[in-house]
Amino acid sequence: MIDSIIGIEGYSTRTPGIPGKIKYDPESFIVNEIPVEIPENTHGKYTILKVRLRNWDTNKFLMRLADQLHISNKRITYAGTKDKIGITTQYFCINLPESMEIGNLSIGDAEIISTFRTGKMIKLGDLLGNEFIIDIQSDDDNTVRIGDTIDEIFKNLGFPNFYGYQRFGSIRANTHKIGKLLIQNKYEEAVKMYIYDPEFDREDYRKTFGETGDARKAMKEFPEYLTFERSLLGYIIRENTYKDAFSVFPRYLSMLFIHAYQSYIFNRILSERMKLTGSMYKVLGGDILYPVDRYFNPDRNQMIRASSYNIEKLNRLSMENRIRPAIPLIGYDTELSSGLEGDIEKKIMEDEEINKKDFNLSSDRRMGSSGDYRIISVLPADFKIIGKNKIKFSLGKGVYATSLLREFIKGNLN
Image (cartoon, rainbow, N blue to C red; front, side, top):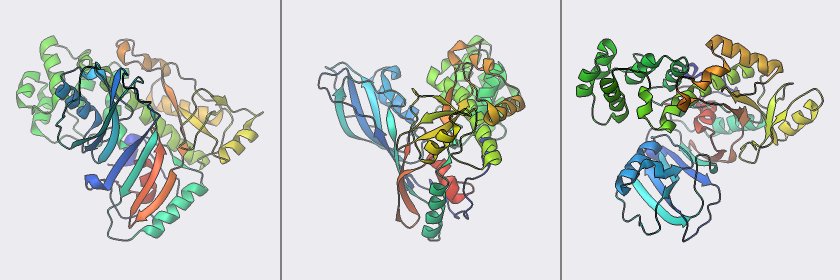
């Protein structure tokens, strides 16, 4: 797939790309969560599971885990979502009575490393970051090229903090398109695109539904494992309408579409900013900024606005990697930037033919999004070349390893 599909244009480095691929087998892409402190408490309300997963999507594992424990999936939370392809070590938090034991769980390609009780509930985002161990498949030894690229990234003081394909669907990169249809109140088109997108789907059963819209026939033809598609089809059959069909999904799944569209707009804005400034750290008048830690996690309690009075100091702090400019994830309550950055944001929104209030989703408040902010660039922590085409590094929470890897490969990562 071409990066422009998800709003990405350009690179922050000029080094030649490596002829290689990632995720050619699970062992080539290892991710270990770096959690916030989780205090152990024998009589705590929650049970923590540290689990090593092989080729498991986070949400699908959560549903399987809930089924094994005979509890609602709403009683299980986690700190971070992970893509399916790879080996991941993650923490799950289960609201279980003290008298209820986890027992011997048996879930394929899942190994429970440890369990303990705690009084602290883990929520999405309760991470310092993730450690990655990645093997790039290539016939050549690219140690020198990898070294040259990482040197340039540190010289540039960062690589662009783009949202990667995982945010949009690694196989069918269309969640943002569905999100846009939803904020435009085009429910029928959104549901139909989820079930059949001619740009990506080749299966006859999907194509037949796309051509006929016959939900009853599709329900007979769609495989049992496509549970989300079948849930939508069942809703259409029962209610004889497409409106509110996504209500059959848990809210966090429905919100993925809205968040994906916000991410697409972010990628477009950042791509345009890179084109105009060529900088990964420069502070512009009117920018919104946040202090950052060693993993480049922003301190959201300290928003800063750049002005003519403080811009010189802010640029110095940005060069010291103590703060970073941020771009809004457009929502109904987002404070937009001003100056050049604000002009870029307005230009992209006009091009998309949207405005902030659209994200209120007045016809379905359950999926409304007030917006957020995301810093424009980051640096990897503890970067090491540990073998031929094999690297190890850590990134802050929410930062995509693929956004770093594309600077090395400069082409299709799949």
